[in-house]
Image (cartoon, rainbow, N blue to C red; front, side, top):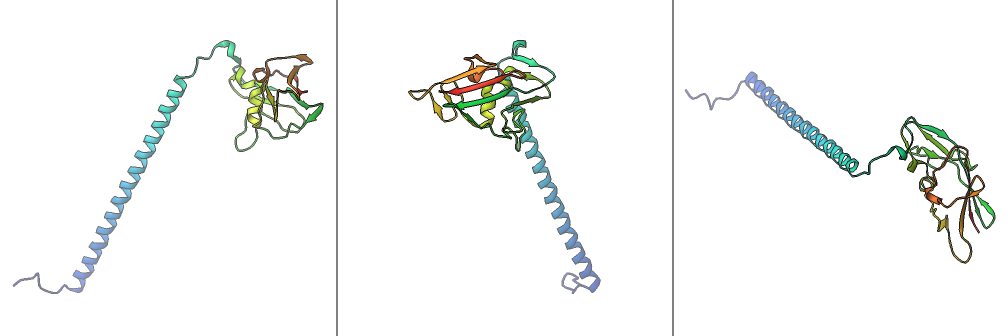
Length: 184
């Protein structure tokens, strides 16, 4: 007698459905495991690429000398910057350098006091007037301040503690400095 053509009993049909569901579940689990493995491998490669990029960047940086270091343990200084255009004092806004990323060179109030707040290694380049203007998003150099460029209408001058200073954007700010930038 050929049993392959016999109709299935109710219990055999139930067992066949259960086996089919079990096969589908096992197949779904395999696909999910493969997907998780692929994601983990992708994350690994992204992290590895990031580490390699950082290492290459660091290898191409000039060596840091002791003369470049202001502090190894941070600092908290408060120079003051005042900007005058044709004798009129310009606003230095509050919250320069504050936002999604808290910059160590920033302002709190619109009073011209620049906060230099570092918690670890501080290099001279971190403390320049140019760094402050970069954080502000405004131009500053010996040729230009804000929207004013040297020419027949005036030239940029800078004073630090009432003494002329020609370092301009390269000037390394110190605690309690009074920096005046003028365009006349």
